[in-house]
Image (cartoon, rainbow, N blue to C red; front, side, top):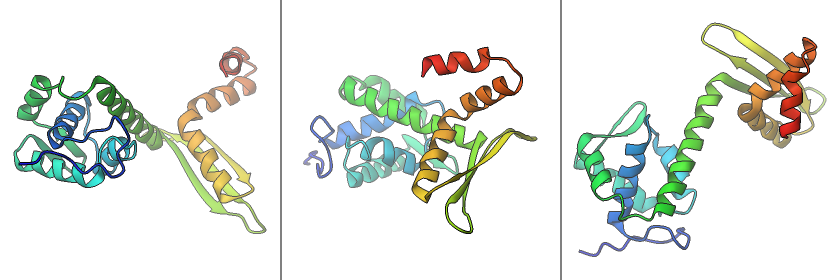
Length: 192
């Protein structure tokens, strides 16, 4: 049986072998401490041109059928047999590909976690522009909230993404100014 994978959309150094793709997926799910959704997997391995989309889908189905991974409402996670395969065959896939895919997966999961606390909402403003509402929330109340009008929707989306990534720092700077505590924002500004 030919194990050569479809390589359309895969960059040089990406995976071209179906077995390697399955091992990479087992490795990723084994290393991550939480489930990952199909869209997140697509973003971290296909979006980075490490694996062809159709090959990834086929590999996921194979791993599910063979009870090496499972899928529930939270996403995909590894089963003990899949973890064993990831451990036994981890050297089959290049360390660079594994490290890159893992870093991308962690970044995606961290961003999703931040989005649960750092919330944004964009609405059109009568007369032009877009209002970007940003807030930092926990389970019980809103810790920080602000609105800013941006000239266009693209700018509002970009600013919203930056708030998701840096909302905590922004809050710390505003709080430092409001409480006359320069150390809260000077360190941040020095680092930037």
